[in-house]
Image (cartoon, rainbow, N blue to C red; front, side, top):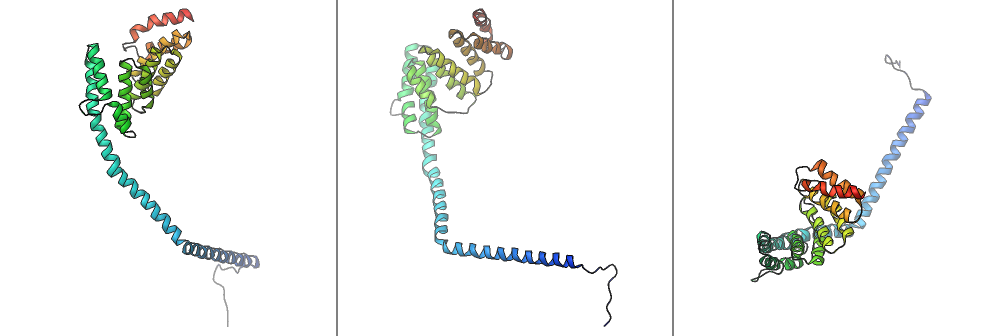
Length: 257
């Protein structure tokens, strides 16, 4: 029988045939290896299916427990704590607004200890630990103690307070600095003023604690730092209430430098 070649057809060389055979063999080996791996996986799954099922059930139980805790424990506790804090905050606000010193101190004590069956800030911080309101109670308690000149308790509660709020966070650190200043621990005070400055930059807290840091630095004889802090007020916060006092203290720092 006659044979013919298609136009353009070139018979494969011996080398090309050998390469093709090797490729076919390699492909077969790969598929065989995959089949073997799949079989081993199936065997392992079948052998350990009880353990796997147990792990899945365990994860589901944890997830459901977490959701139930949030729904039936954490959320109601958070709401209850917030309601209690509202009453204590009212006494704190009244104390801030009162000019009579005796009445002011009494209102701060009411805010701290509570009255008429209502929790004060101390009870809220203790009984609602882990809630936002419990955390905030530490802040108000610390500020209350600072106002009534109980500086150690002020430091203790303000250190227990944590926040990323751009105002409350630096105010809390700066208030710790104020308490240390009153205790005569100027170096500690300066450290907390510097922490307050570093937390964020804004027109309210930044010049306030730059000024206090400058004054503390002068007291410590660290005039170079004082000049840095006070100059920054002139350069960046010229419209602040502290800008009018800067030149006096800046002159002291420059004279002692």
